[in-house]
Image (cartoon, rainbow, N blue to C red):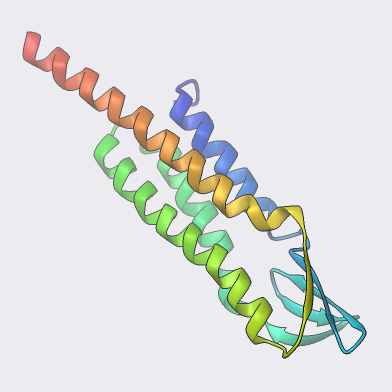
Length: 147
């Protein structure tokens, strides 16, 4: 049910995470040479310097979980559990960005781009969705008591 506010939160979160596949995360300067950090890894011009397979797997997995949550609107408790799991994955993805950036080279200068904060924004949106789903669940339970 896309008209519910939690579905909008989850949809926006999925779109933010989905766009990470194409956007640049950072520019890394090592020994006066420019490297580009993408979802597939760290590249120097067209050659891959560091493989980012973990990030390349995490991003579609998290986006897929968000789309699954949208269609589980009748199972609110399961939605909450999956969203808590995706928040953990999003925080892990955010940590992975920094881990890969700073452990791949010694003495780096990094210029992070705007997409680096998308996992944090998505985690906040997921938290708001959890709160809205919890309110729906409380409303349904209160209506069950009245009958």
